[in-house]
Length: 559
Image 1 (cartoon, helix red, strand yellow):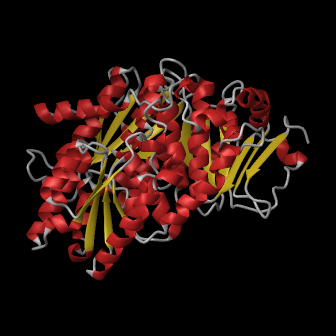
Image 2 (cartoon, one colour; image 1 turned 60 degrees about the vertical axis):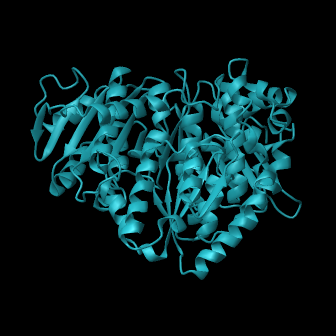
Image 3 (cartoon, one colour; image 1 turned 45 degrees about the vertical axis):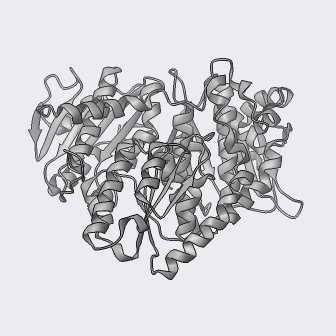
């Protein structure tokens, strides 16, 4: 079969593949078009050799200090013995509940790693008071807290650290003995942790950005303390790294990178579905890697993480690229003629190998898109807006109107003449163009009732609009797709859902609590989106029953 119909690449020893990538339809044609030049330019070997010139002169300063991830399967091994010893000490003391306080790259990878191994890890990557309260309500006497932040200045992580430290002290537990820090060398957090005498401080590789940090201390420390065999994870990456360095048309990383960013016209909505890969919530980790790396300068790839019945995969639009995560097989069989006519990419592999695969592929995609995959110029905008609101504590923006327990706000001019939630939603969706997408941003408790009620809303809105729909829990998506929202193509419309928390949790040493913090983060993000000309509808739920009613409204009629 010709490469224009289907392309399959795999990496591994003769007895069986460790990574498999296949591309069909437009994706295969993109591979055929771009792969020879990628090989000719020696992109794979240069990337593995950490050549910072691959993305152009403007990107070179950033790239020169952000390529350490290509060798983490080797350079992270000195962490293994200290981690083994620390886990043994903690278990001997009856401390076997691990809580991770971190955001974005500091939380997404450990969640995937622990979940794939079937180990329990409490991931606190939210400022919602109900989620913070739930984490605090666990058995503190058996709890160790891992505080992960490159700088330590991340407001979410700093607030969580302060809160747990106070909770340990109130329970009569030596707080310092129960806090482990992961941070960059020489960071303010490292200095503070050393002075406070925290249980352990692990230095991460400073030449690795957050979204590429899965195999650094940020990914390995919390996972190892939760009981994961992280040496096996490094071994999995090591087993395929040499294949990703080969300037060969059989290189799976080159195939995936070309398929993601080389279609013509560009299929820039990357719809990721798991079809039994065995990799726990892998799409959530890939979402940040793809969106934050590529969504800038008015271009980019929008990852859309979906379930098994996603409308986007029933009737595939011309700007949608389906990427299916499948179980690893040993045969490397070719694709049938029937399947080859459909545009699709399938990926399978071990966890460590697949993480390294996507990192290489996204770096290759950045070269094809003509952007720097290692910066995130728009991430700070929402953070700065939130800080401004916290510092000035302005009066809340009054709602345009209220309906059935929902306070309605919006960007200027969006709701002229609108008097009901139904009309407001219709008005927002009317702004959705043929190449656009809808982003739902829920600043609610994702682990509680809200998560259950809103479970089917994404699919419902996708059916209703006939367009790709992303769903992000705030504020964690600010460290992920938030970059794409502001820096990517200006064709998104935004639905923000907020609510009144049940719990009240103070932040020691701060003049604001978690409810105030998450409210400022939501308002700040909405302000920045509106200032960039994006349509934003903000729906604030004032009581429990109103959320269920709203979920029904959002599902609405199908277009």
